[in-house]
Length: 197
Image (tube, rainbow, N blue to C red; front, side):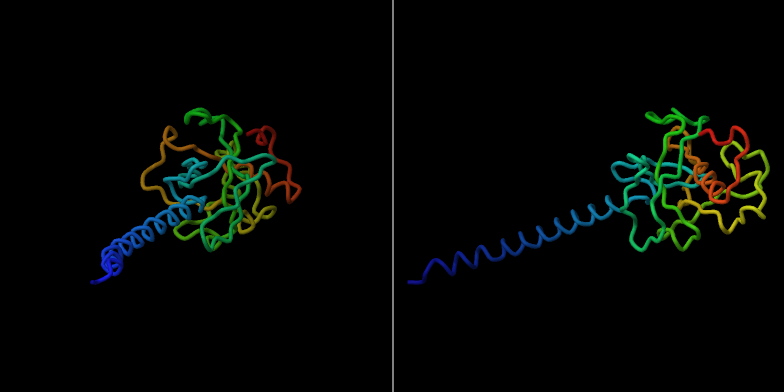
């Protein structure tokens, strides 16, 4: 008489193989979601702890700056730009998105060229010597390129928006802190009132 063990093994083997395949697929999906969630500073929709934001008409996911201006270090693969606390909510858009206030600081990936940014994004910079129309959000607007060459101005990695960002849907951010930092490095005093966030 045949032993029942081989019959049981034959019956269970296909089920356990299918179960193992399902388990592998499930774990792969979980790992992929975890990688996507931890790769911050990407294009909206954003990971937990980040807000959809707009800088000069382009978009990014930005976390709020932590204590002492600390920023989450996780960034998309092959990104050379480093995360720094260089973005701020300007007075004119403060409160349009719930929980925002004037001067609230956010992190962004600081770049000096497009090649520093994640794939699909570019380095968006303030323009030097653009005239006083932009003075409120661009302290470099009235600075001569002789003092601050445009090529020396750092920017933030951003993505092209699918549609024009609305101040009620995304947090409008200013690179003013980055502009003031560029001036300070060169010993240039900002125009009266332009230091206020």
